[in-house]
Length: 172
Ligand SMILES: Cc1cc2nc3c(=O)[nH]c(=O)nc-3n(C[C@H](O)[C@H](O)[C@H](O)COP(=O)(O)O)c2cc1C
Image (cartoon, rainbow, N blue to C red; front, side):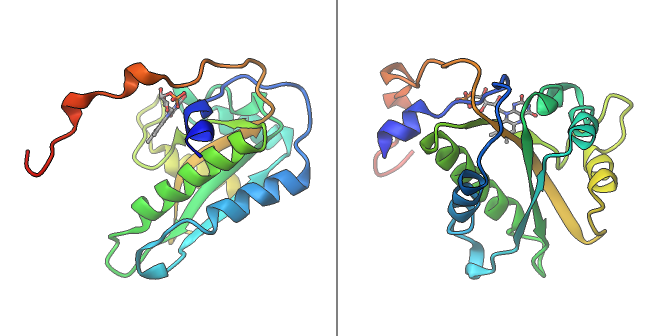
C-alpha cells in the first residue's frame, strides 16, 4: 500500500488516450468506500467527457488551466449534512481515495480546488462550475479531478519527506 501512496503525484499533463470505463468505475468504487461521518455518504460524482465542457471547466480559475488536457474530469460534489459540518471532510477523503486508486490503475489526477476558490474576476469558482454542470443549489462542489494516463512519470515521494520534528509523542 505504501508503494502506491508514495508513487501518487498530482498530474497536470496527460496522454491523448481514452480512459476505459471499467477503470473509471473502479476509481468511483474506491471513492464510495471512503469513510464518511455517521456513514452518511453524502458525496456524488459527475463524470465529464465532453471536450467543450472540459474546456469550460479549465477556465474555472487560474490553476485549473490543465483540466481539458485530460480525456475526462471527475467532479466531487456533496449534499450538505444538517449541521453543514462534515461534507467537506467526507468529500476530501473521497478525493484521496480517487487519487490513490487512479495511481493504482496506472492513471493520474490532480485535486483542483473549487469550493472556496475565486475566479480571476473575484467571483466564486463554485458558482461557475455549478452553472456549467447544472448542479442543484443545495449541492456543494468541492473539487475537479481531471483523470487520464499521465504524459510524464513524476518522481515518487521519498524518505526526505518524513520529518521527525513534525511528530509529537504523547504531547505537543
Ligand atoms: C486541498 C487541495 C487543493 C489543491 N488545489 C489545487 C489546484 O487548485 N490546482 C492545482 O493545480 N493543484 C492543486 N492541488 C494539488 C497540490 O498542488 C499538490 O497536491 C501538491 O503540490 C503536492 O504535490 P503532489 O500531489 O504531486 O504530491 C491541491 C491539493 C489539495 C490537497
